[in-house]
Image (cartoon, rainbow, N blue to C red; front, side, top):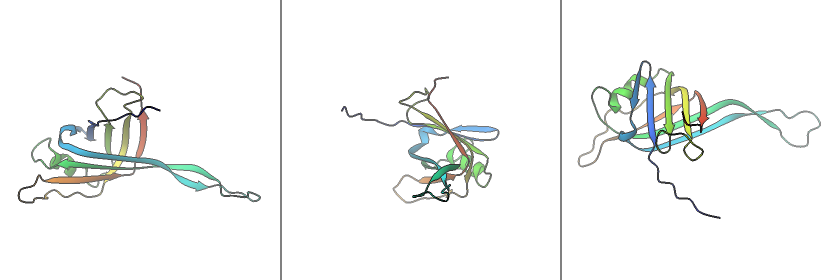
Length: 143
């Protein structure tokens, strides 16, 4: 079996109506966890638990270098806090979707809070944004 090495270069677009922010060049870590709630459907006579998929679940964690001004990280995240209507479009490497570069679109994500100032002398200022909820779709077809 051949081993594949993947060097990431994620694209990260965040839309908080009506503005879309391309923050790909201002992030250095991105994790998406997707799934579905487990709903128990075990019936009388079953000899083990049975489950069916329920509502989708999604968590997105992105670490950004803090930057300030119009269209920058702090302004984008401040616009998202508490709305529950944020759309994230993220792919692992570039903007052309394929089986080896799936694009995930998360709609109606919630950013409950973020740290707009995180400064330490001699270090790059970063902030981690944790989005939860909403729905997700995976796309591998090129536009």
